[in-house]
Image 1 (cartoon, rainbow, N blue to C red):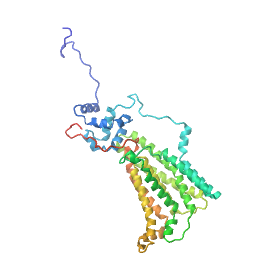
Image 2: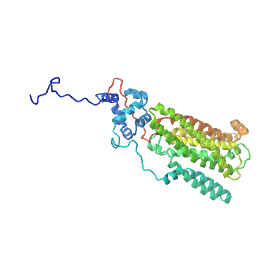
Image 3: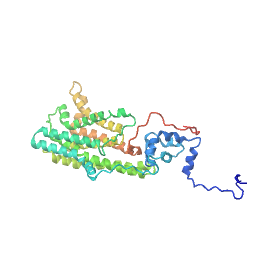
Image 4: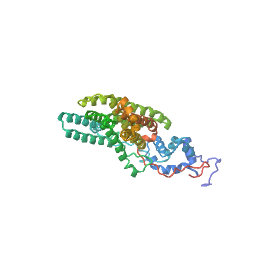
Length: 415
């Protein structure tokens, strides 16, 4: 009978074409898309992150930054965060469609612009050295002041553009409004450390009752060392960022990425420290009449290492840790003149006795060396752990909201 439905077993019945083989990942995704889909709420919550991601590992890094752990991924029926990120990457369409390139590339700068940006970190050191030499040869303090202003402007440019720029990163515990004012305490802490380096031995020695004249050559040498250290700091920070991003793209899991980045972080710090002796020697040859003082030069090198590690943590989003490290160094350096001043009060000689013993054994210049060195070592240990997180090397994202992440129940109810 024409037009009637044929039985499946009847002769001449049409046979349906076999469908394409379905992978296990797609079968699991279809099973979860049924009446109970615990991933859907998470997918809608982080749709912007998933839409602009270029690989699943970037989504995994973003989820890690928002507090999703392997235990949380298990509640979403996945073995770890990376497996959960793979499903989110497969289910959310990319920005620009399926034909979009795997990685968005910005406009390529001309060779001259890239060379100028690469040589920009050399400008603060060159201006500082020229200011010191000009001030000593002409005998005019105005020349040194003008050079110091130009060097400060070049330093500001290096901190705004290039590897040492924060790029809009902010701490996840503070909002954007609070992040605008977070730079002021950092500037005050850095200014205090630089002021302590500028005072040198003069203020502590005067409070301890020693008659020492102010030595401007030691201060100029410290300023030149810190200005010259901007170039290796920028280059080391860029070296670390580029190789960490490459390892992020090549890793197959967060644990593998963390194991590979820790040696990179340590190598970056060691590479920067190895450049400091040559910078100290260059500054000593630049400043006329600068006498070698190993203890004071060690203190300047420790201050440079502390500022580099603090800036590296700030660039990758760990502003609170950088603030704590510099604040501890500020407190340690402030405690010495405070104790020396309290020892001059009636009945306060006991407070100044540790400072007197330290000054008698190693000199007052050992105080900044110990304070900045200990703080830099603590920041290095923290950086090796914090910078091994994949979320520290992704693009700046919106900080996590205060609302908790929806976690499905163990019975499979809707999240």
